[in-house]
Image (cartoon, rainbow, N blue to C red; front, side, top):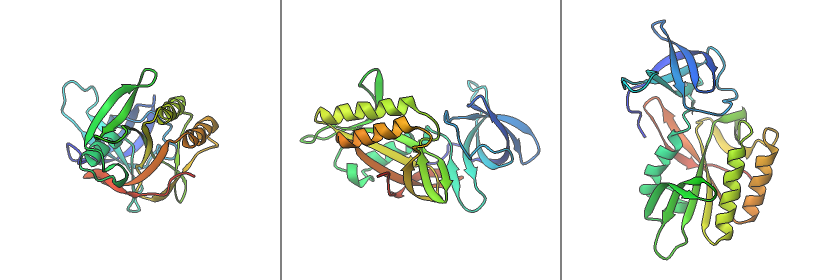
Length: 234
């Protein structure tokens, strides 16, 4: 998935109200960018860090920049836009590039299911049980090489696990797919200390037949694409 317009580098001044970030462009101008990430962004919102912003000239948007990447300045990047995984994965699913789900020919997004919820992707293929695929963006890393989820308490995430478990118990295929939007991690673990309830729901969902997939990403200022499978949480 390529970014629609070329990204520009900046330095973060501060992130506030979850969805706003003041940044300083290379020419010294200070601007406010939209931050498409409702999580805590633990470790990714320190003042002074190098970031990459996507400009836009859409008259309907109040903010003319969107925060897309954190540049760790060591050759690695983190994608902070939580809408990116679904866009990147839709293409990968349609192109059958996810081996575990390549048998499905029909891909539908945002299909209603459960209790007032929408599944990220519903996959179908004649002769196979439907596959309900929920996607989570992973950006937290507190230990070198190890990604963690979640980065804050997520009651919504716990609900999604419970609804996936119900689908599995009803005879469907239920998949929790974690997309690690960091290029410096090779495995994923649950952040049990941050959200014990989510960790407990994960264990219960696995016991009821929910499958877990974990993939990395390839990230540059040009775009974000599906990477290789990573070791997921036990």
